[in-house]
Length: 227
Image (cartoon, one colour):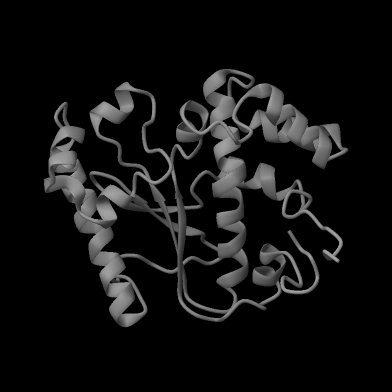
C-alpha cells in the first residue's frame, strides 16, 4: 500500500524507474504457485468468482479482461482459475521486477518446475515454496525421503544441485554459475529448474503478454496517509 510517508511509490514503479538499489538480483516463481493457496490457504483469487471480480474491479476494458482469461485455456475450469490466480500474484509481478531491474543491474530470472510424484498425485505439483526443499537440501532428510517415496528422489537431488550451485555462487560472487545467463527484456532468458534444468527464452510468453498489455492497473493500491 502506497501511503506517502514511508513507501513513496509502488515497488513495481520503483523497479521500472530505476529507483531500486542497483544490486544483482535473483527473482522467480514456481510453476504452480496457486495450488497451495487453493487447497490450504484460501486467501487468493484462485476460483472463477474471485478471478472475475478481480478483473472487473481493476480493468474497465472487457477486451483486456478477455485477453487475460484466454491466456489460460479451459477457463473458467478449476485448474485454469488456479493458474491464473497464481500468476497474478507471483509470475506477473516477478517478471515486471525483472523487466525494470535488468535495465540497471544484473538480473536472473527462474521458474521452479520440479515436483516429486507425491506432490503431483495430490494436486500440489510445483506449488508455492516447494523450491525450499531444494534450497535447503531436504532430499536426504526423513521428510525428503517421505516426500520422494513414490518417486522423484533423483530428480530432487538434481534440482537441489542446480539451485544450491547457483545460489551459493550468487551469495559468494554476486552472480550464479555461468550457465545461467542474465535476464534482459530483449531475450527474457529464464532458468527452468527441474530434474533436468534448462535455459528458456521468454517463458510463459502468452501469459506474460496478456498481463503486460493490461497495463499497470493491477500493480498497487493507493491510500491516503494514516493520520
